[in-house]
Structures are given as structure tokens and as C-alpha cells.
Image 1 (tube, rainbow, N blue to C red):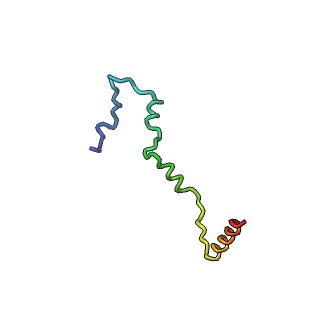
Image 2: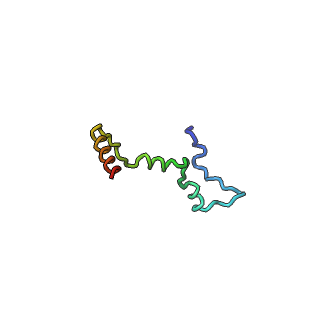
Image 3: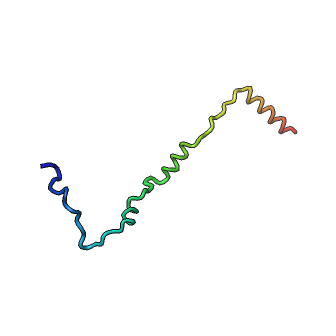
Length: 74
């Protein structure tokens, strides 16, 4: 005997106590929801395009500092 062969063709049981739920209400039970609050925002932040940090060598730092001193004095 195959598994579930004795019940596979039986009709669905109908409750004697409750009326059937309308299809629109049944569909709402399976609507998507956010199980992890904030997870979606975290994924968006992670995938956000960012710029690489610019590393300055000592000479570039010197030039910027020199220009800042000129601005400060004037």
C-alpha cells in the first residue's frame, strides 16, 4: 500500500462550527511580512555605492597644510 493512499482522495473536512473564510481574508494570511525588523534597510545600506578613501602622501599633505596656513593668515 502506497503512502497516504487511503486518504488521498477524501474530500476536505467542513467545519460544523465555523463558516468558511472568504478568499480575500485567506489571501491576507499569506501576505509577505518583514520577519526581521530593519533587515531590509540594512541590506540596502550595505549595497549602497560608496567612494574609496583617498590616501594622501606626505607631499600632498604639506601642500594642503601650506594653503590652509595662507588662508588663515589672510
